[in-house]
Image (cartoon, rainbow, N blue to C red; front, top):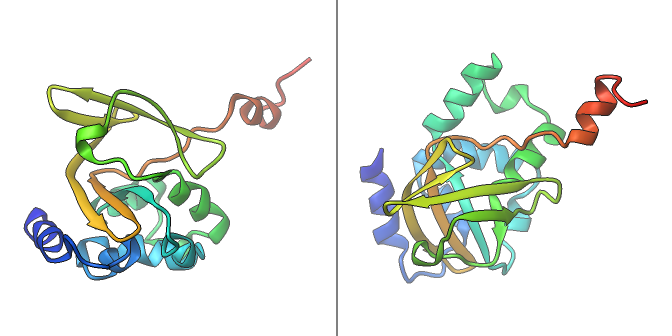
Length: 166
């Protein structure tokens, strides 16, 4: 897996490829691309940005599908995919050398990432590892992660759906 990701990094460094074009050019991101298309987010991520994208690999998506009991993107709706995919995107370009521990807002306005930097390694939400950094695009940067990040429901939403309250 990392061999082809390394090739994409080497081939696209210094090019004018957008984040989406880099993802399309790499088979390890084919499920991510399929999800972006279904969620109608391709045009948004082809915009000038800049963006920082934490991009899950196909292996990460397959693990998510197995845990959800679905066979793939086809079994998920645009409404289910959009908040998940937007949760992987941060406004602005943040290179690996500039990443610090803390809470980071995402393009999913209802959810933030919890980033932890320890011993030169980056972990997101206590479980996803950043496995490759700084794949440079013309409109931002991609950091590859080994897990699909799922935004937690807000406490208010959980309370309302569980009948909590007065």
